[in-house]
Amino acid sequence: MSHITDVIAKIKAKNPGEPEFHQAVEEVMKTLEPTVAKHPEFVKWKIYERVCEPDRVVMFRVPWVDDKGEVQVNKGFRVQFNNAIGPYKGGLRFHPSVNLGIIKFLGFEQIFKNSLTTLAMGGGKGGSDFDPKGKSDMEVMKFTQSFMRELFRHIGQDTDVPAGDIGVGGREIGFMYGYYKKIRNEFTGVLTGRAREYGGSLIRPEATGYGAVYFGAEMLATRKKDYKGLRCIVSGKGNVTQYTIEKINQLGGKALSISDSSGTIIDEEGIDAEKLKFVMELAEVKRGRAKEYADKYKSAKYYEGKSVWDVVKEQGIKFDCAFPSATQNEIDENHAAAMVKNGCFLVSEGANMPSNLAAIKIYQDNNVLYGPAKAANAGGVATSGLEMAQQSSRWYWNREEVDQKLQRIMQAIHQQCLDASETYATKGDYLAGANIAGFVKVAKAMVAQGVV
Image (cartoon, rainbow, N blue to C red; front, side):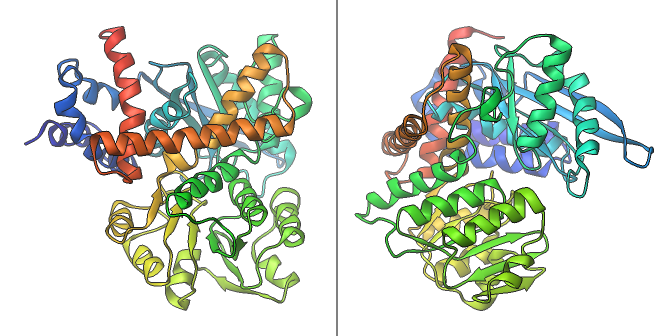
């Protein structure tokens, strides 16, 4: 049994009932096999084992009172995974599916994603099984204030800097920051994703989607291609999806889809700027369902109860580029096979771990340009890092400055992935390149800092 295989087996045995965490560990660790021979010090110092164990896990109850005066109780989580290269950094997810295993998978992935940004940020993640959908602003405020009453003691601008994720947008960040500021009596850069008026950064809302498209552009350039005329499938309808579509349009491509938990929209005419404005209002203001898009635009077809990838498979929709931007494991091997059959030659992941291991193998076996989440969607946390820098200096950059910095960071991430793939694995293997480049930097820092 190889050292890596042994590590994977031990982690699975020590952490039963956490399939998403097991999947993330296996996906990363298997690609790290070439580092074992090149870095015997990593084996000596048990880096492979240590990087899979969080520094600490905080779990707590979140009691709050709804609009009917009834007491509700949710679970809260914060996993501070690794701070070898900087303070813990990672989003908060509010969704009924949230459990410890999901938060651990997200925090583990965040270690390497943050490392790839070249900024000084460690990895962490948190959240709750609270569902903000269908809740009034007052209910969301009561919940987030209760959540922050416990979380505040575990975070700080030099300790742990949370941000948003699924279910946590500008409204939720605002309520949490306001309460943190009140109980700590300080104005600091402890939460990112804030509105511009109280310390946020321009381009932060756009950054994850823009970054995924920029990373895709770098991959396309290796084959002397660009987005002009390419048909693109995007899943989800939230923040990442919206700005992925916006940047695809700006670079000459055509986005054909949005989706949510109730179904999928396919618009063969493309989701242009006017239609995208409607999507943004639908998601952020009306908090409506995807079906309303088809009610308004007759060029669109609605597939109830189907994911984008189900529709692609069943309807044989032809397209060139995929941007899975909804949630983990939305694409399985059957979806991936259909994607390849229908002409897809590029996948740039906006969501965290949206493709399962079997789907990734199909991409790689069919020479699909595959941008794994920890590289392709790192633009969001990278711009959070830029927001932290602006907050610390009390100086704010204009839109063009932040966008240029984001583009340079995504170019640097792409180059790191290519360089690491060539040094340790197969040139052009972005999965191995991203994992190895992110890991080696953290591993060297851990060795230098001793057994802590």
